[in-house]
Length: 282
Image 1 (tube, helix red, strand yellow):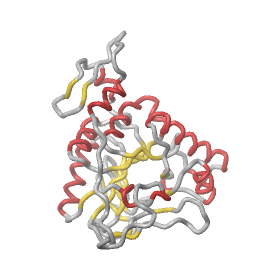
Image 2 (cartoon, rainbow, N blue to C red):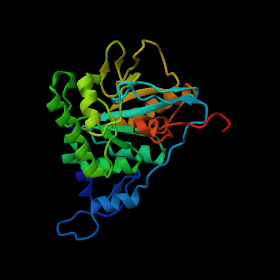
Image 3 (spheres, rainbow, N blue to C red):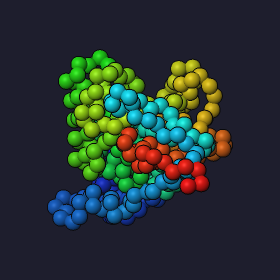
Image 4 (cartoon, one colour):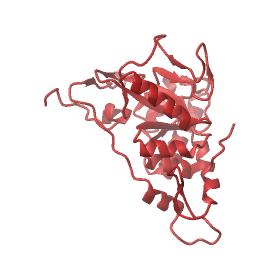
């Protein structure tokens, strides 16, 4: 089901300003020769900066011995942090953007680039709220079923479009359904991808998960609750703002906090962290 609050609808609302929920409502009347919506959004929403890990508190993922992008499904850390990642992009909840921005929630978006065509401004706002835009293919196929040429088209094409729209080429890739093979890693590297990021737990927001029911939470290892360094999968679905509040409540009750996964990935794997982190007390 497509989203119910697309940015294009809010544009028609009229005056540049801030709505009741804090979302910018921008002028786009016929013949308007003023600043572009992108320029206006950039002025309203400032980039967020996220905390970095404490020295000595974590073990960075390592490059693969075969030279291909390594596959990462969790971060080895002593800190009680989890990483929220959100896939796809066919639902457009404006209040979710507002929550991410005002509550300074670090998330990472894995964008299926076909959705940029209709909602590019929505994801520009997400980017300025602090979300990195990473690669989730053009059209969300099962990568392991495709030949090398088709896989490369899916990954390189998505990276080309995301770079064009948001000013940065993705360096992290998430295969749809978590399905990939060695060919996927090979062509991903050719497209500029430095790591393949999977997940260790899933919040089935807006849908029913196997054995956990509607809006259920499931760990890949069959355990319960959060573990330090969990990478949590969510999706852009209807009701995402409410679902974000739900999982933030769970995280807080468990004594954890959300952190930016890119700050726990070394630069050689597409993150922001040094390839040789400082030792504890250093």
